[in-house]
Every structure is written in structure tokens, then in C-alpha cells.
Length: 195
View (cartoon, rainbow, N blue to C red):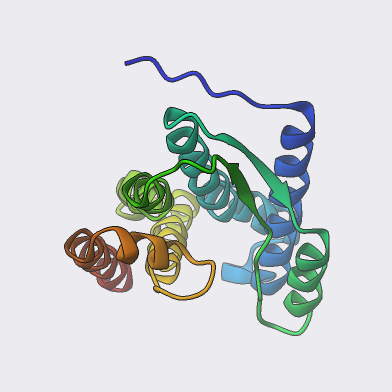
């Protein structure tokens, strides 16, 4: 099956701004990490956190479009500002935006599958970063370790079944699927803490 992702100039602009803002916020928090200069930390943040965020959102988008829904990412400018401001305080509160989905005829199952796509993309990305985490070289190893960790945390966090988080829609669709997905995310998170 061929997947064609429909996008717009507005969406691409929102994704780029959110990617840069969230990468900057994490670079501020991680500045001096492993003695690296700010620009190198920003690059690592853009690869790890940036990919985690972008691919999480695009996973929602692709599945939503598969079900015939209009879906595009929209940044939340105020929340991006909050992420940057909190970063200067030493922590991050990040909610950079979300994929807006319009299709009044989505079933509970379709909504659940759209929701679970994001956290499971983070699980897949954690495994993609894993080989780097076992590298013998400094920088690739650090990228791998942080890539596994941030994706594992995002997967677990997004599966919390409250408010606008993905877990609420997944649990409303199928509690068994929810349990398996949470179990996988927790295993990956525990694995990330052991490397």
C-alpha cells in the first residue's frame, strides 16, 4: 500500500518553527552537557528531540489521512514560548502543538489507531537510536543514549490516559491494546535507563 502524505506550506512552516523552538529549549536545558558547546548540543537536540517530536506528529497525520481525515500540524506559539522560558529556569514544559484532525465520521477504533501511532513511532525511534547508544565513540554514543531516552519518555508520557494525551483515545478504543502499548513503552523506558 502506497502512502501519500498531503501537506501545505503552512504546515511545513509550523513544523519547522516548532522543531527549531523545541530543539532550542532542550539545548538551553542541556547546555554544557558532557562539556559540549551550545551549538553542538543544539544539533544533538534537533536530531533526538526534534526527530522524536516531528515523527510522532507525522505518524498521527499519516494514519489520520489513511482514514480520510484532513490532518495538519499546527504549532502553539504561546506553548513554544513557555517551553523556551521554562528551559531558562532549568526544566521544560513542552507542548509545541498538535496535528489537527477533521473528520466527523471517525470511529472510536480509527481515533484509537491514529492516537497510538505517535507513541509507537517513538518506540520505533528509540530502537533506531539504540545501535548508536552502544557505539564506542563519544558523540554518536551520546546521541544514541539521549535519542533512546527521550523517545522512551515521550512514548510513556503520551500514553497517560488523560486530557488531550494519546492514551485517553487508545484506552477508549481498546483497553487490551492500551495495556500492551503501555507495557512496550515502559519496557523501552526501563531499557533506556540501563544503557
